[in-house]
Amino acid sequence: MRSRPRGRTSLAGLALLLASVAATAGEVAPWVVATYAYPQRDRAAAVQPLADYLARRGQHPVQVRVLPSPTALVEALRDGQVDVAVPNLHGYLQARRGPGGVATLPVPDVPAAQADRYRAVLVARDEVDSIEALQHRAGRLRLVLVGRDSASGGFVPAQRLHELGLRPASDFASLHYAGSHAAALQALVDGEADVAALAADVYDASRPQEVRELWRSAPIPPGPLLCRESAQVPCAAIAGWLLEAHRQDPAVMAGLRAGWPEFGDASAFTPARPMPLQLPGVD
Image (spheres, rainbow, N blue to C red):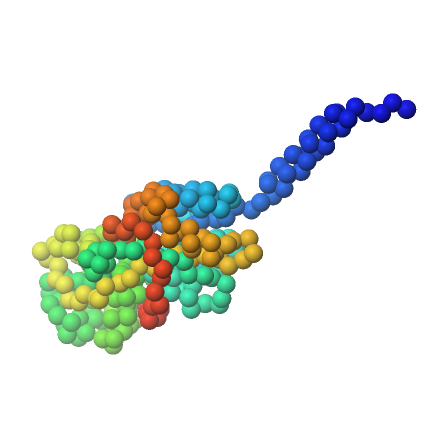
């Protein structure tokens, strides 16, 4: 019986080995880097540099997803559909108060002067000229918030209303969610609402004459990034890569700045500090 040439056997074995490696690589589930949608902001483009950076550092495929809201983002993270999330503060606080399995990653290091400007305001049409008038007339006033899971246009001003003895969902003539800070302010200007809650920088940019500021919050910290802890997702390594991103790939933070004005001129990540904030409801 004639034996096969040794070289042909080696080539066949190599081909089988390469095919096996390719099949295995094809079965690797990509890490999903996700965030939430916001009007007039291309959030997919904003997180793409982050996804590309993690793919390069981890030598692992990465996909980008954009969920409808911060709440949907946290739910997808808990369900294993998202591995790394860029939330707002509301999303971070939701994740923190739920069951374990979600790790806190670093947060953009916003310059102090810009961090000081990220606040919430309660503003009203001229006829509501004080907090006392707001309290006394709430039942006849139409309230507009940005969204249930907005920070500056949602739970932060809602918490202030609760402190004043007012429940947004039941103590006002109506409650409407505008979907964006600009839309909340415009509803007031157009006479479609009497009281609005929104980000202070959006109000400060225009300060319509017919609108009066009633209250301004303390600075609101940004929410840290989040990571789903699992054997397939190296959250500790990802945290380290983020702290090196300003040197390795400045496009990461440039993308996030374009997607989130509250990040200001942040150029690097910093370890997240403990936050005493709790997450109240808006009802």
